[in-house]
Amino acid sequence: MQNILATIFDVESEGFQAITTLGKKAVTNDYAIMEMVLVKKEGTNLTVCDSFSSGIKTTDDTAAGGLIGSLIGILGGPIGVLLGGTAGAFTGSVIDAKDACDNASMLEMVASKIQDGETALITLADEIVEFGLDSEIGKYNSVTLRFDAAVVAAEVEEAAKMQKEMERQAKEQLREQKKEDYKKKIEEKRAKLTADFEGLKAKFSK
Image (cartoon, rainbow, N blue to C red; front, side):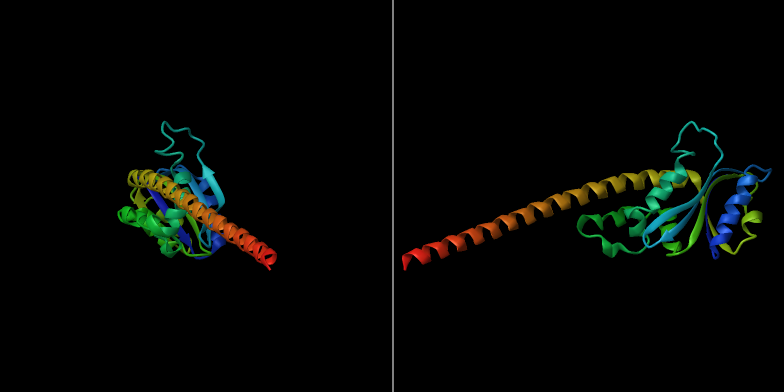
């Protein structure tokens, strides 16, 4: 079965060991790894520390080769922050996007599980034997979350649409704010000019 695995390590160095070891035997009788990305959560950002790709070109990048990159982009973007429990950073209609994300179980679970300072290995693999990678990943102090890759691909596609809409709304809010700020600035300039002229008139009326 094609799965996305999110392995969260207790020790950062073990994450590097894992991606190096698995990269050297990406295809076995138990599993085949298409892609891996090792990330570290720093604040609300996900920093890519290392990566592995099989180098195999796929017929649909969104289905395989580009899935991990798209997933990291979502988890490290505003939706990832929102699902990670810091929705207070968003205002207005942007917060409403969380309602649309309620069924994004994989995204929500991974976003909330990876804590600040933790390292996680995101793997796209075909596990020919059920839980085929467990014997390798189980060597490390870690917790692994496993999800159907097809379901994740669908979630990521929907989340990408939401993210674009959130960005559009944010830009619109910024434009409106700039308009309000500009109007305020005009009124402030008008008031200053009026005061200057009133002062001038008062001076010459004496």
